[in-house]
Image (cartoon, rainbow, N blue to C red; front, side):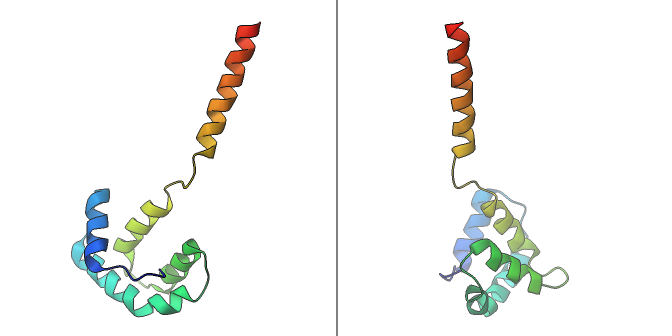
Length: 100
């Protein structure tokens, strides 16, 4: 939220993620986000908490389309440490089984 996102970027994100997005409602959400962006950005440095603050301010069906995008993007893991740990444990088990 530090950098203002353009409408085309937001629309392209929805298209590339292949999510069922209503473009008219997404545009309404985009306009609302533009209005409150500076206020939300000043609340905290953590991106997830900024979005929580934004969605808390939404009433009724406002923000639902952009929430689909944000939920998807924030659910993407930023690291693969868990997967690497699984491979390490399996490798250790295989090594022990080969020695026995």
